[in-house]
Image 1 (tube, helix red, strand yellow):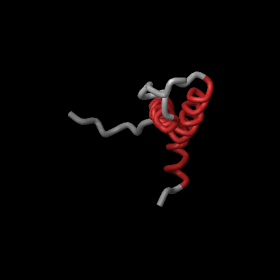
Image 2 (tube, helix red, strand yellow):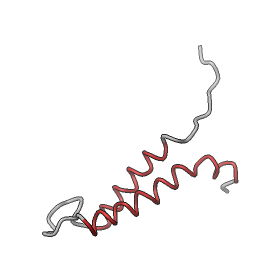
Image 3 (cartoon, helix red, strand yellow):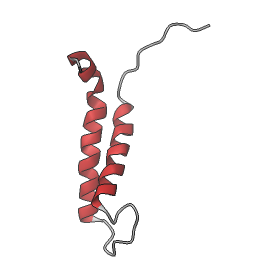
Length: 72
């Protein structure tokens, strides 16, 4: 079960995924490939998937990582 503490730590990544999916769909609508032969931009599911992945990576940069024990 996801606790409030875990959710609080994960919210930048989750927000990045949602923003990336929305951005990927907007990219498909506004710029996408008109001929349909482009592998990434010709399909809305692929642009949303890649947008979500990129959003996760950007959002994960803002998650504070726990400091591990001093490993000597």
